[in-house]
Image (cartoon, rainbow, N blue to C red; front, side, top):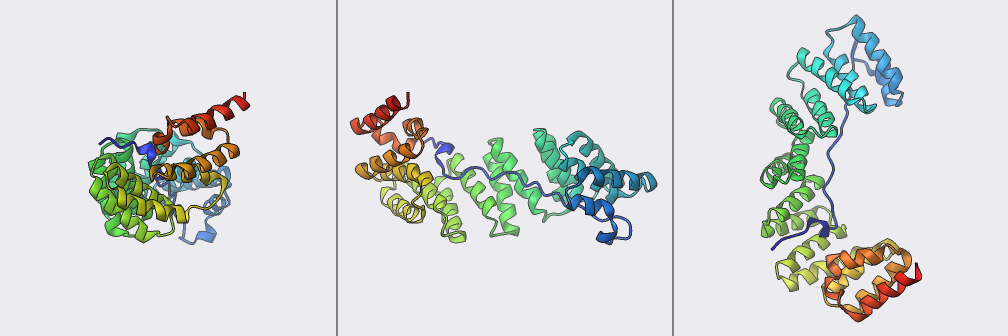
Length: 295
């Protein structure tokens, strides 16, 4: 069974981009003008402060690190890498510098180098949650599902209630065709966040693909109870109705969704939730009539 990841309600949770700045000088944050400018989002001034500080204290590793963080926030990525490299020359065991360099390399789509940096961050600090999560997410994006699951498991071992790690792990398991494990992970997500309809929907969609119709209907029923009755929800509700064989309800919600947003015409023709209706005369009529009216 081939599973299309676009049919999950949830998407891949994005790379964490934490940028923790450090203090220099005597360690008191309020006496560090670069820090103050940074938290005020006056990055140009913050950068000047750190450059002045480095001119007087060229061996201050924290100042180089902070310069890298500010340059990172300014999206001056190549300069940020140079600053982090200097910070790491002065202290090769700075897990934050390895981590943030990894984030910058991720932004530049230099994936292999980013993975190396996150691994080095983890080797210095085995509980660097952000590095572990980002490793899992990079492997997921690279379709290396085995490594993705491994690093999401490491993240969850340290932080069991990390919903982003669990959601990405579930998606990785689906794409690795480890469906039973994926269902268990959706159950875990539901325990963590029982009011989120996405997890019930994804579990139901997976179960229906596995042929577990009865269990899928129960999951979809829970999703329907939790999805708000709003225009941006009608399309998905109609799709669920189609999946569980409630044709008339599916078509009614699809009409409402199309009236709210004409783009749903093409979405319905391609969304696998509506596949059972694609040859239905009323489905064709709904989309065709509205299509003609919008020309």
